Length: 574
Image 1 (cartoon, rainbow, N blue to C red):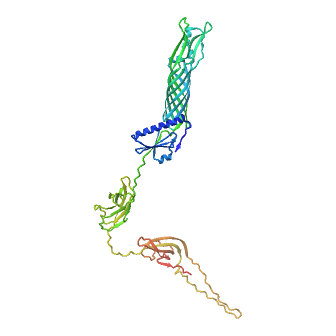
Image 2: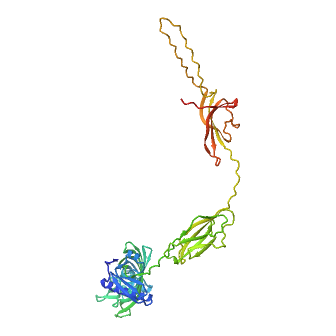
Image 3: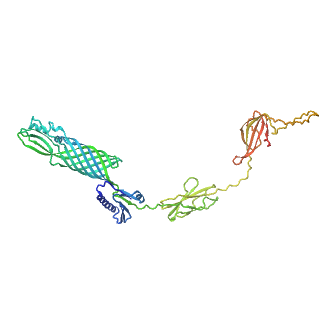
């Protein structure tokens, strides 16, 4: 709860007390009408907020001047806000050029020309509409045309003092003072612009201009030819229409253009010697002429005394009804049960409510065939927590497997529907008759031939033949020399030649039922004797994937005798 204090309170504490009293009366009277004359049960005022409880159960909070409900209270109390129009004061000053507008005959009376104006208005607004006062001042000069040949001065001088030199009086300008009262309108245009219109009426205090002419008399005194001066009765009724186009330059300040139109009447007094021959009578006349015109200038306005809390009523609404919640039931029994082929048993289904008020629930049961259609083949709404399919629901109609699933949902008064819980069941297919044993599948082998090297000779069984040891030459023994010991001759190792190695490349790959090595008919023979590698793998009878290597060795082949394939055994370990 927060309190607002205005630094520019226009009428002080009295205005606040008066506004609070009027606000309370209006709120209570309006509420009484809306509530069909409901009686007040209780009324409590605390910290600027009056809480009123009525016999029909509605609670209204009335906020006093200078207070407002904070956002936390507003959100937590479930209230609706109905705020009256914002109240504030607006002071506007206008200054510019004043332009008179009269008929030709009236212009020849006072010969007015444009002048200046300054007006000040203060209005109190209730939203867009306001009421206030306007005071101002405007003046108009006098044109030199009053000295012209067509003026009344020239006509009188021609009749009274022909040929004499006229002496013109000093000129006093035309002046208006006014104090007006009336309504005002302020229309916002967007966030920055506004259009203000004031229509005011009241009292104008007008002063006609002062000008005239004299000529030198025979006795030394000046002879009056003509003079116009203000009348003694200056107060007249009039009105002003003012329009402002304002642009907000600050929170409470605006500047813009002003246009005014005014209308009133002006009394005046004329004096002059009678133009009758030989007459020395001075004639004095009182006259009145209409006076109007347009003013154009600048406007500067200032708002103050804004009040956002006045006449703000927060009505507590009845709490919304508690939301209806549907709880998902639990499936009871076996999920995925399979019935034997030919079974005539109709499945029964059970579930359990998870709500504390199961007596208010309806259960929606739907049965689907698991064929992807998504359309139920049977549905039923029941209050029971079990259900058996009726006899007219056919499930099995062929010898193949049939699968089904069902869903159960909870519903309360048709206001909600829970998530679905599901389970499935099915019927087995017709048993398959045993088939006599067939001939076992013959084993298959995959073999690969790798091209490894070329050879110019056959290496036999891989065991190098031993060379005969050279016989030692025994020289004849001498009697004096020491006995000669025969030297042991060690045969030299001979490098194996005739084989050129190369990179191993798969030359051939095929599947056969015979793992014995045979040179393929569709594989070209080498141009010269060569050594190849041979790899055999057994294939699985089910998916024909290799299960392991059966044999892997090298063999020698001579293109001149391709049927004579000889296997080269591995080297013996030392």
